[in-house]
Image 1 (cartoon, rainbow, N blue to C red):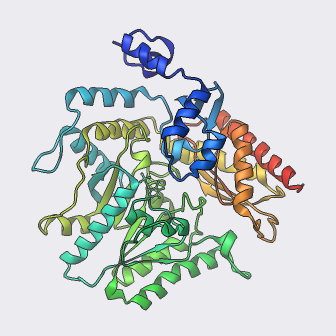
Image 2 (tube, protein in one colour):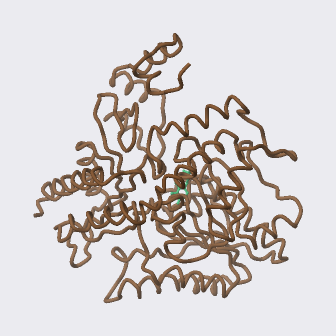
Image 3 (cartoon, rainbow, N blue to C red):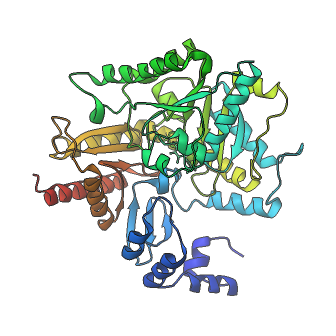
Length: 479
Ligand SMILES: *Cc1c(COP(=O)(O)O)cnc(C)c1O
């Protein structure tokens, strides 16, 4: 039996079971939509409105392209949801999963047991991560990773006898997932409003969003420094003896690809060290090559105590998250008795096998090196050249293969649209209709394509994005 999902499902349904499966996948778009509307609640969606308009049904993918159930070929400017770093259709990952499912589809790592895939993955991560990161705890998502971070942080301070260190400081418009802890750590007000109760002892400072929030004549560097210094003010307000950790994404992803100026992270690190506070980098998007470094904290030049991983860890082929512990934190956790936290699927063998195959592709095909020296700089320059002096583009942020385009009513005056989210949605819909997947966060248009993208495909994304932004400007009557 050949293992080629695509052929089995779409081209040569040789097996009876596969034929049945293929038949099932050949429903009409209308049928798919009706069944989806009847039975499926989507994440972060207004279901009433979605059911009236109908979802786009994605049926297959290859490289940086997706196909929908009407046969449209769409270029994926978002790598799925910031995760398909090695691109779609990599046989190495499918083979790794298939082999592992036959060998040992599941065993737990709770009761004095382990298994080869989780051992290989841990050793490989220790090799690929910066020097002080030699220990990893596994979960199934970024949200669970950040829940795990909270557990480790509190356990750490307990082992140090500093039981009053309970507060965690994070940022407004940060994103750390959608469990109760992840959602509380995040700074998305609309999520907080829908929570039955928040996790205690989590407080937020302002984000380093220069275009949207800098006042007066501050330079980006001065503004970023001032925003970092809010951390110090907050620590002094709460009392350093009560503060356990600060958590932030090296660059905000879901919040709009907000890249702080170079002054930000060194100052955050200085403050954390001064007041003896753990520094957590949520690397769920930044990790595994997005900026051209293996981890985004390397791009910004700081050294966290904990890193949260997910998304690119498996390139999204199967779910997996992890937390990396700096040696000084790992030592305290390892030498101080029980750590009372675990998930049935911590270190799942199939996910671990896929992660190993994925990391080896990133390493051996030098995909991240290419992002750093070739495709990343090309992408950034192409965007900046294409949108320089565009009447509704106020800022282009990013590095490597991630970028944010700020839609603005008056770019020079840094004046945003009053109804920013609406303009973002208009532009996003133009992208969609042009068969480009680009995400809108409020009035920022985001790109984060698979890291295997080539220059021709980058040209295609940028020219489709330009058409969509032009069409948006035209609809708004701006030229
Ligand atoms: C996506 C994301 C998460 C949450 O990960 P899930 O796998 O969706 O739970 C956490 N942090 C950041 C920075 C993310 O982008």
